[in-house]
Length: 462
Ligand code: FAD
Image (cartoon, rainbow, N blue to C red):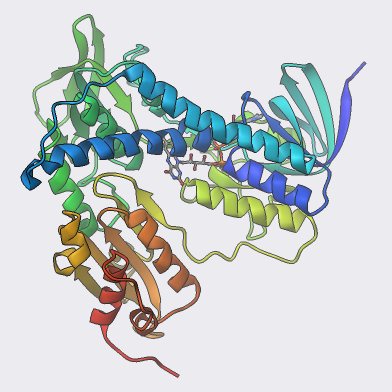
């Protein structure tokens, strides 16, 4: 006999999008089942993404800060790295957070079903998991199945080739590591491995690192890491990788000599999981890449099925997924809301951090959109000098017609924390003068955004 259960709302996928949606919907009174194929909630972000990477980056930033103190007259011996202990600590951080999520689900009465879900009809899922095969009939569903690392087809099947999940496992510290891809994930992992002792080469196909970010923000980062890494190869393609006993033999496209590496991290992007769910059985379409189209209510073409997070496209970021999860849950609960977020901040948690939000100068130039800009170099910030961060920069972009802030970018320590003020200012439609007139604590790096706004000039409009 078919084992069938019922749910008011099924959320498929327990990442930041899925668990946020499930919790919000339960808080609003819906009967929720959260289906997750992995043994823990939290998705990529908590288990193999944002959290473990930031835990490791915290440790290596402390390490680098200590190493950098020799100019101030303080020197340490080279640190001894106990890899197993470091791995254990990182895993314990992840474990505490995923257990916390399980507790939050229980408190709210969200039923968590472990297994892989596939649609068998517009109102039915089949879930295969630890408890065998189960069918779930639902009134509404939220698809939150996220994405997975892209693997270049030319790469051989070899254990020395890692994706971000394998890299975060920290099985060992290879002597020579090639990082394929100069985006956020590649740069963050390069920093971890370099700090722990690998000689790192980064290869990026496009002209520069962090391709979607403005060059003036990337430059201080590029300068900082170009002396630290063995090579930083931009406008360079990897054309072949051959697994040999002495290492991975890597050939490059621009006449550069082939080189051997002990390990390779492929960090060239992520692919949505939309094609893996049999959504056609529900009557839904995915695009050729595997993304599912949604409207501003997070609704798919079927009014009772919603989709959120990495699987719907746009920036693949946890805070975007959770915002969309909240919107979908509220709409499914009958609230009159829509996804009206104007901006989604991006952060590279590198050393120095790079953060940007809203319009970038690159986008403005590409689209012919006019803007006015004001920058504040951290050379003029007392706090930056006390931190050895005088290479930083804060800048704002303003719409010349309305006079309100439309974009901002920051490079320097804590840029990821500092950018939130600019995001709020954009959402609130603030003018630079309103930021400049807000008293910021001194001496802090937060002043640099206010100083950029002050540099912009102008007075408040009525
Ligand atoms: P996911 O987190 O991918 O969760 C989807 C869940 O669905 C998974 O748990 C999966 O097991 C489950 N699932 C899939 N198919 C099925 C199925 N058929 N049945 C049941 N369950 C299924 N973002 C940031 O904002 N900040 C960062 O600092 C950051 N760092 C990152 C670092 C790394 C190394 C990586 C890889 C990513 C990072 N990201 C970061 C991106 C972030 O992790 C994702 O954008 C975010 O996790 C997307 O959330 P989601 O809910 O859409 O999907």
